[in-house]
Length: 260
Image (cartoon, rainbow, N blue to C red; front, side, top):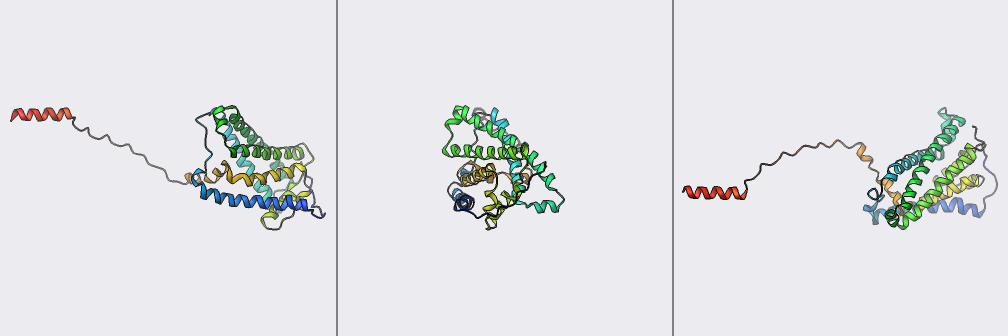
């Protein structure tokens, strides 16, 4: 399936476009950075996902691996698709057709796994009373926002690149995304993108803004160091010699007294 390239529009940028595609992303990124600094200083030992495995483990057993595996694959796909220009992939011999075919189908599998896992995690939180009562305000913000971001991304991919004629987001959305980080914003690069891609991008930046104040901060506490940590050697402790009992010492003392 060949993606239809979409040239950047040469139209002038309106004030609303500057607000949505320049001001809002930079505000969200600023909140992301400053919020993490504040959270680290105020709650350094609270960076945890607050596991509820003891309350319910059947849904968690399948939902958590599906969600995390799908999330890792989705993040890796977004890094390649948004951060790496198409000229770089072509330079190493990856054609646009090969890239988009791989991205669409691998991304679809990853997205389905992530949606399935997230659905299980949300269902167990809603259906298990103990977990539902322990849901705090940050979770009530995180789960709907995360669900909306994931569903919008899956819907955009399915509507345009699986069942549609194909859409080359790397010539529009990716150009806008990279421009933000090199301080050369190009809002005109995304204003012509389909609405589903725009909503997905906007919800993703809102998720970045909410990130420091939710359980997502536990991503930065992943125990990666355990992969390179040397093995721990455990040795069995030898049993200590039993001390003589008080009764035995009394009998010994009485016997020696009689002998004297």
